[in-house]
Image (cartoon, rainbow, N blue to C red; front, side, top):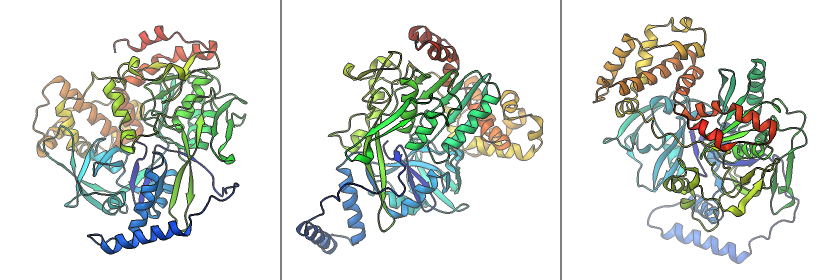
Length: 554
């Protein structure tokens, strides 16, 4: 989990990190002790021996890169080396976009595993899903071959408009799924949705990139002008990004003079404190809810932690990831870079929310979320394992915890009752919904004029007989071998069709509004606006009363 990669043209990018923005920064302390001649000669001799005697040809460049990567594996899970061919793409995605197939991935057990398709990108629109494993690329087997990130880049990168064919192993599917992906410009807006749900403003913030604060500030102003009675900031699965973006975004909600976050490290430059200003103050008053999940990390946790510690708003969802360290990035002469854990960060109450990693392998650290799931933590908050010794107090005296993520004020169990029907999933696996929507919208260019807005479309568009006939035909052509006769299967399929037609006609807003119909976590958050109002007014929260409200039957 600690290091994700974005597939794009010219390289890959990193995620789930908190990056200190230090352009032009210079160390002020004495230079570290340099390697002695004997050490350098030993390293040089080892490189020469391996280059000469290894069973296959291997270059000095590859050996040195592997040695550097091995050095970082011995440190912490968040420090790493960035090869020069990856660095340019990293900068591109953090500044707002890049070209590629649009997936975040990790190499797990010598296999390319899709962590998440990037919303709106070509892979996501084709139906590629989290957990998919890419086992073949353009006819070449890529599983179990000791594949590296550089290999993935070489095989899958490419310019907009070029194609790549992949075969995917998906849990529950008896056969490999094949996709032809047309590379495209990947939309990397920080905010994927900002709008009203009834009289509440809702903002999905997906990353803390260079554009995040400007996008959020505009969204908050627009929602205030629209007269909303509360704000829900959705940080679920937001893996983090720039530290200064977290500070500015938190500042929009926190009153002037209050501490947002502070950092501590070994060198003087790593010890900093960020205090709210009067300049960033768009929504310092009014009911506020922050949604988090196990995929919310670093910068997301800074914002949620500051809001929670000052009793400014209500934090809801599941325990966050638990990344409480900050990295600084240093460039090397060949344009490669290293990202080094530079300091720990602390919330205003003094919490460091970094989960333990000392003595753990990278693999064990990455499996920590799986261990939480096995314990039942995602459905039962009593299974959260945090020592009582890590208790802290908010400004009003409420108990909060450090040492392993932000624990929400009100826990939302992950919904396990609304699984999609197998038939609906099978059709999605074979990309039936998108191609059906494309065929239908091509016949009906007037759809744009039939609805006043994306919101109007989401409320009023129904799947008619023509669209359903197209869908059944495409499902048969794509060998979806099951029936949609049951109410559940048909309802699920129609939901997908409405979302994809909305995407093609009105863009991501319509698709998101259709998808929100099934977002039980969001529905729960909307019920808690009175709780956020009470917390802001009194500094107190009747958790048991509001828990009952959350668990109310849908």
